[in-house]
Amino acid sequence: MSQAKFDHLVLRLGLEQQIPADTSMSVSKKAALMGRLVMTHGTQLVQTIDGTTSLAEAAVREAVALTMRSESPGPEQERLVRALALDGFVVELLGVNYPELSATTILSGAVGR
Image (tube, rainbow, N blue to C red):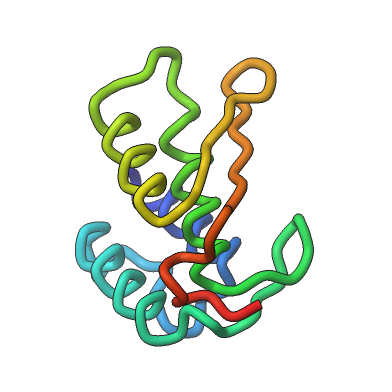
């Protein structure tokens, strides 16, 4: 993922105060920082285009949307879908490459709703 795409993801999750939007930090370091923030502040409520949700759920939804946009399913998509299924999530494709995420459980109790 490019710096610009990752910076857009940071903005969509409302993490621009914690993760710098410049090139002084690599995307992999930004991703690690984002992972730590999601793990420590996962229950924090954030505003998304779909309404108010927890940071953890918003991060999962963004990961699904980014991963499922390619033309054909690849190994990383299959791994993500399997990992989400372990936490009670189901990913369905609605239309052409438009993923919908539904939860039967909430991220192993990490998400407060």
